[in-house]
Length: 379
Ligand code: GLN
Image (cartoon, rainbow, N blue to C red; front, top):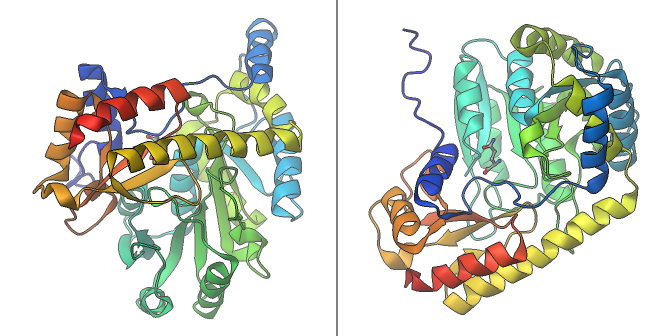
């Protein structure tokens, strides 16, 4: 067997979902909603079921989907996009990121990753034959030290992975921080691969700034995102890469040989989502704002310590007071004895850290209330 996968286990996030299901726990581990996508998408999916398409779309994405996506992203990113040259539609941002990495990295290259990180980034790097270099995001603000980032570029990092808004910390990078990154990226002739799947889930007064939209950065940025979180369709597996033509031409090749294409009927149905008006995104932000308030005030009443998220739909809870030697065992006990699933924080760090668990709050108010009621037994 190949040694490429040596040292890999099952994704901890997906494993917690599996254990949660076995025990019928409320699943606040793997982040996905328990409510429906917008009605317009469901109705369109019904129409597509009857009328099609049911055969392959264009490999790099159905024409109407790419056109609608280019228009929507031009509006939010404030840059001009050519639907034929700057976009590849992928099977989720999971494929988008892997495709981006394979498009630019050779074996032996180095990739800079902020830590804590979403676990796929390390797997993507290693599967490309590249080597991760970690830059700490320091609690409680999860800010980074510019000099530490520069050390990574000095050591030869070809690309930096930038998850913004960040999973699992909920950090939203400020414009100043992004400009600092941009300056280093330019100085060291590197790339940034973004994961911006939570681009529309940012809480007041914070604002999302697209890295590709910063002066001079479009040429150096491979923007990855998806429709999963924005339209509550994580199971549709629709993501995309946005980049300059030279990089997209590479991505098209990887994507073609890897998957041929994302599901054609789902691209067709999701196109109505991409055409929704601005109000939709405002309502989505407001909806998640309420969920955050409900969940965090519940954690306050229980007396749990956490880092307040500025964006995305996760919260890192500090479990130091429980003095556990394994956050994984703690999370397993939480599933079995309390009936609520979280992700052990160690899966987001390179070094052994046993101090955190991550909950997500992309759930109906009644689900969050029931979870909070159960969590009162934690102490
Ligand atoms: N991003 C989600 C999380 O961190 C899950 C994504 C996935 O499992 N594909 O929970």
